[in-house]
Length: 292
Image 1 (cartoon, rainbow, N blue to C red):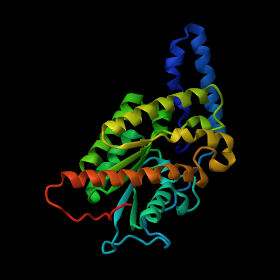
Image 2 (image 1 turned 135 degrees about the horizontal axis):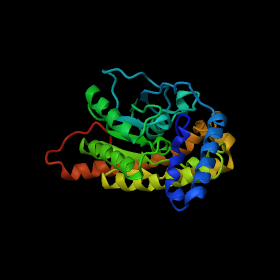
Image 3 (image 1 turned 180 degrees about the vertical axis):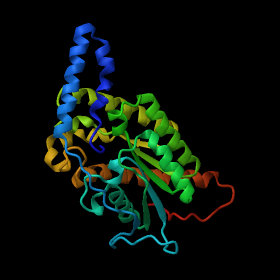
Image 4 (image 1 turned 180 degrees about the horizontal axis):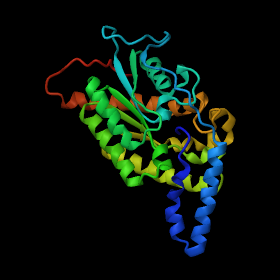
């Protein structure tokens, strides 16, 4: 989920409207436009900057600022949109980046450096710029989490194109030796203030994108987590899992995502290390300690 959606995204209903004709299609489209206008007025806009979360995380210790001479075992980088940045959180410890970094640190004993490249409002197209900026600043990370997709839906990006851009970014990271885990497009149907049938259509579009993202991620060598599977919990307790803007996840909502991301990231890191060890000609000492 992202900053307040551009509800001109009602054009995602093109496939549905194509089944209609003449005045019926026009009436349906006008109804969706009216619902979009209503949603713009109801859905809050969170203008706060997400909490600064970068630093070094170690089990049982407060965060330490990253300094060039301060050691760490794993460099974790977060790419994507406002959900990746933690929009809707009040404190850094609530953000998905920190939850994942702390989860990995506590499970493995590693010192995890967290770097956030995510930008509010980013689409899959924006991931390319985030990656380019990363390569300019320094070397690629050991691991990357990517959370993106909702803005592709609200900004009418074609599913195949959005998924292809994500796959390209995953491929570039994997070619650099980075372990990549992607959280696919969330279920936008959990936003209660988007009226029906607009909400159902946006939900369908997001689900299609999530499936395409997962396929593109796997083809590129990454691992995909279907975050849309958490939707039932959001439906059941929206006041708990949605932020006050009624669009982004709350701290508890991000905790649900982190519970899925952390074990998958740890397992994928272990698998990638095992694969790298088999294909390495000359034994080398890795910066990442052995994972249990």
